[in-house]
Image (tube, rainbow, N blue to C red; front, side):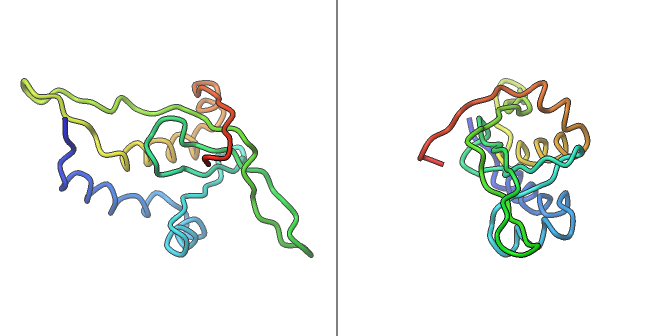
Length: 126
């Protein structure tokens, strides 16, 4: 099973377009996907696969009125079906398509995403 290079390239081109200007600037500067859900929750989409790759974030006071977000220790797992039949062959969708689906789900229906997701505790590997 393979993902076509063209499909992955198109997904990578689409990814920044689903981010708001602040999120896109952060992504372009750091390579990290950090988003805010429809209910105000903070999340980081880790790009190491698509299973258990959505990490919850919490605000942390850095100094003065400035805050940043820190990982809470919880990872969420909810993703689209990643394999499709193409005739007799089974093809894998690009991982970046899963990230886009996760972003759109969190940004449009954060509560629904949280109801659907499996929740994991993660350790030092993250």
